[in-house]
Image 1: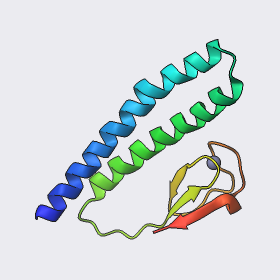
Image 2 (image 1 turned 45 degrees about the vertical axis):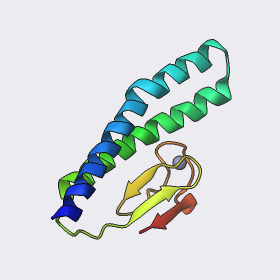
Image 3 (image 1 turned 60 degrees about the vertical axis):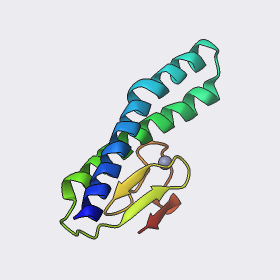
Image 4 (image 1 turned 120 degrees about the vertical axis):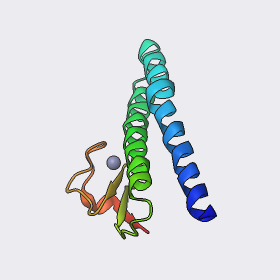
Length: 106
Ligand SMILES: [Zn+2]
C-alpha cells in the first residue's frame, strides 16, 4: 500500500511540474526568444513545450492506470524527447523525424 501511495504522489508531483513548465515557463521563454529574434532558441523551446505537454498527459494516464499492470511499450524521440505509447509513429509529430529515430524504453 505504501509503495502504491508514493508512486501516486510522485506521479501527481510530476504532472504538476510538467503542467507548470508548458503552461507558465516555456510560453514566457518562447515570447522572449521571439522578441530577441532568437529563432533557434524559439524552435527548441517550442519543441520542449510540446513535449512537456505530452509528458504531462502521459503521467496523468499512468496515474489513471495505476494498479492495472498494463505493459505498454514506450518510445522516445532521440531528437526532441517526444514520448509515445504503444508504437513509434511513422513521423514524429513534434519534430518531423522518421520513426527510426525513436528508441523503445521499458
Ligand atoms: Zn521528435
